[in-house]
Amino acid sequence: MYYCISCSEIHYKRNATDKVFENGFYIDPFGGRRLHLGMCQSALKHEVPIPHELEVEIPDAHTTLNDFPLTHVTPL
Image (cartoon, rainbow, N blue to C red; front, side, top):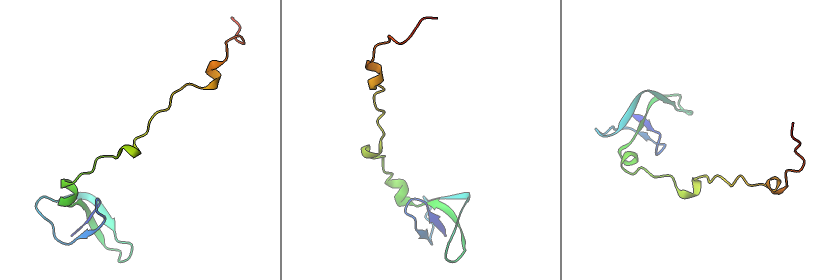
């Protein structure tokens, strides 16, 4: 029995292709049971790529301060 970190459910049977972590545990908030963490076969087979909506685009570094002339700078 293990708690799947991909589908957030408790799996009572373990398939040969499931991954169960040795050192990771999930503590059931209702019963206080300690369950191993793992990943089920369906989560391993259908890994979802990151959607394009979640990718962060870095904005251009251009600001209005870049438009001002450098007349205020005096040489040393």
